Length: 492
Ligand SMILES: Cc1ncc(COP(=O)(O)O)c(C=O)c1O
Image 1 (cartoon, rainbow, N blue to C red):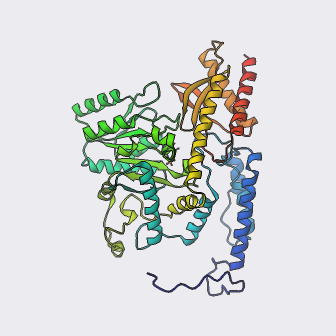
Image 2 (cartoon, helix red, strand yellow):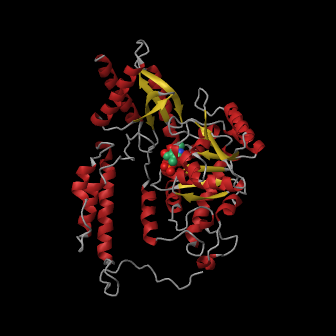
Image 3 (tube, rainbow, N blue to C red):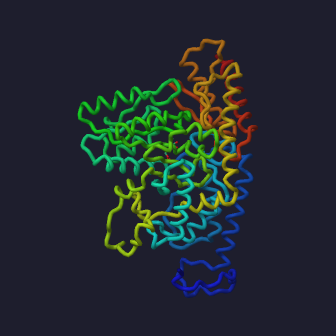
């Protein structure tokens, strides 16, 4: 249904005149040269990554000295600008796609995903409505359909792509509050291992900080159902109104998975919305093992899962899936006269009716292009590798006489510390040694790891989700940690 017939794409015309365009347009040849050179520089960067450090950064004063300036009235050569950004700005960051980047939650995008963002920016469709972007909207529906099938959601389910796990939770909690009838004195429940993004989302939708119940966990860091039941019944008796319970499908700290089946049963009995924060662990669903671990997720009212984590996409792409899509539409659809032309009817959804965001970028393209290019089996294997490497790390840690496992490997994460089993070291000393080892890995090795607290104990943490990480990368990092540990212990 083309409004005008398209001119055929017969290549770039080197001599086409740009005189009729504004000053912000470049000549086709210049555009092509710049794009080629940019691609060259990016590919060189990717090739050089393993020989670089996983982290580089500088102090604000230093960076300000180099970068803070008034915007120039007249321009500079675009290539110089790009090269400057790649020399003076971009290297000063955590290299999340480095094969030894084990800190926090890394993101290592595929090349088709990267190019998809380039293409999406160039076409720049606005996925607010079907009218403004029917092709891209349809592709988003395709990706959502994929997610729906991976989860095992029913026909009634749907969703949309959002900026990430924070936005997914915010939209989900808002829909939950609306579904509950927007009651006074709302409360939200989550385990004490839940991500700060869930807390923040609950606060934004109007839940007082002191009405967010942090439920204790069992010895496997899974929300304790009895404590949850107790907390909800006490709250109800005191006149509070539970609007949502949030389960973890992979905590950021140690990958723990809450009892999804039991929680969903309880939530449906009590008529309380269940949101699953699967921002980190959601795409483990692609693997047999992950599907088993996440059993019950398909019963949740909503799920947030981040493509920019374990689906190997560039920022930003998260999915918000809901079991009954009407819950999003009921909460978010708002009529605006200026958009009245965009209503095509129920069969042609306007994504702006399903979340707080109106103008939206084309996030689906990167997911679709990556999976079309490599095939889903390659993604399954990549996710599986991360889980296997975490299991192998756990084995290595248990066999070491100076490492202590603090939380079992779960969904690609393993937490441990230096603490020789045959020496009864004071807790403060153990913490000091581990802090020093963490800092030494940071400054002296090319890997980066991060820390967390496991039952209040300072823990070293490896999160292994880069598709380019090899077992050698993991093993050599563990060996370095052990080596530094031995050196620090010898000073005691
Ligand atoms: C478990 C978990 N939940 C939520 C979030 C927040 O997601 P985002 O940063 O994509 O908003 C993260 C981010 O790391 C996470 O690991």
